[in-house]
Image (cartoon, rainbow over all chains, first blue to last red; front, side, top):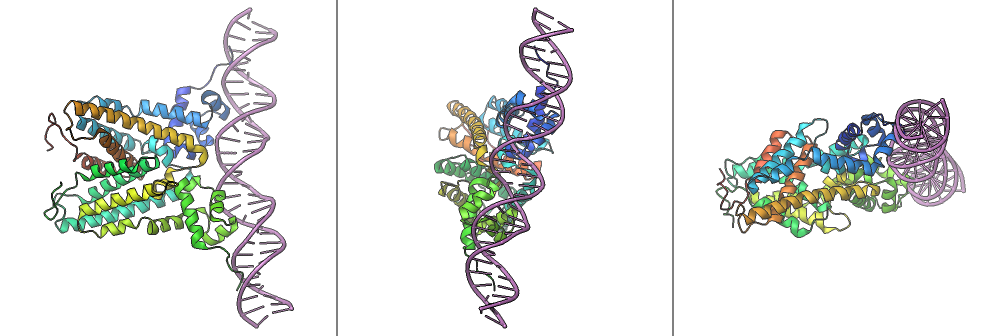
Length: 201
Length: 201
DNA sequence: GCGGTTTAATAACGATCATTATGAAAATGA
DNA sequence: TCATTTTCATAATGATCGTTATTAAACCGC
């Protein structure tokens, strides 16, 4: 018995999920969440519990609704196809929605409140500067024959930065130095070589 | 004329830098910052301006004091050595200090307040689960001969996750789909192949 | 239609946030 | 020594945070 719920719980969770995706866990305030869900505060609490519980449910829904490419990738016949499909799926997911780019799994802790946006931009610019330095260096290497003519300095710089960023995330997650070194070695194992470079061992 | 400053501005900035490194920009409160610096609130304001300005100065100091391996790497003779040194330096930096792992450039937006720690752990566990699934799949691939005997499924999984995380960071920074696809292609170009896999084109 | 129960909406809660008045203390120049 | 100027420390500011009383409205079984 009792009064019926007037809002759709799943719709509300979807709306909440998008806010978390865009602003991260801490950056999303209850004012944001209730506004997006079209539901008053106590209604969200009664339906999902507190903010942490709400986020966990949104995260679970995220994986089952948006990261469906991963189980699909795992079904493919070869490891290479698995990796290729996972990469492709991630690119799709992280660039499909302009209003919430990136991945909630990372974004959930990467994003923040609106007031911190200038700081995030500053960090983006810092990283871009590092990437630009690498790119210029690789252009020189190409000119010097240290990289082959087919090499793309911008791609190599972006790739290297991606590995660096990924390792930073992993370091924060507590990955051991040995693991990170293995990752770096793997990342280096495909480095293109020009006429002046030695053969890979 | 006027009273002399009683605290060391550089020491205070170093202390502040470590707090930002550990807690991120938004996760570090002024209470944390003043406690670490051993300086009262108005003194920090008069010396560095507001929180954003303080963070920017800490970030600048971070790059010049801790990311010194990057300009050093750029001096090396070959592009491969540049990449190798950058990766090595990043590993050093992100694992050297147990109290603030990771990289401030990422950490600045990755970390948060102490109350959000359980959520960060939940996200870490989610990512670990994905990585475990990939590893198990790659172990199967190895057993099936799809990956060579020398392949390390755990390393491949960690490497792939690192690239995925790095691309997520880049996607959030506004990288184009084309750029991300180039990064993914580069990341795939060194994928090991077993007896059943086709040659790379 | 009436008691029991659940939801809805308003408003308030205490805590913490970044920021800053305010006034005492200390150091300079004359 | 006095006037001026800068720093220091205490404490307050308004805003926002997540969370929850409180009260009114809607539904069920009987």
